[in-house]
Length: 123
Ligand code: AMP
Image (cartoon, rainbow, N blue to C red):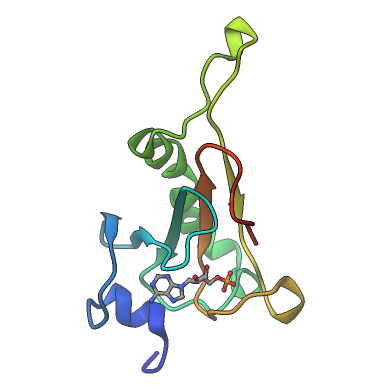
């Protein structure tokens, strides 16, 4: 999509801080972080919203979700210590869809937010 900012980021026409990339997916830092760690996980292919996904997108969506534990480890926000009942770490995973979902950028993305509380206010 010619005027989509996340397509431009995926095509390296706009700068971003990339933390992971493969042929199908890119992960970069949110420009206005709502938490100490705030990553955006996007498909390189333009999909406007989660509402536009079908069963044919299941493996792509699964791949995006399955990246999260590894990204959380890289960022030091993984959940630890459940066994000792002194759990720490953790994160939120958010997908906004459409106007009522407060989606601002119409290219599918998963927000991965985590780090020590308090946060500035996650959407
Ligand atoms: P949403 O409201 O779910 O559509 O979230 C869009 C997110 O994209 C917001 O958290 C913005 O801060 C973020 N964002 C917008 N432009 C950029 C950009 N050029 N680079 C990184 N993040 C961006």
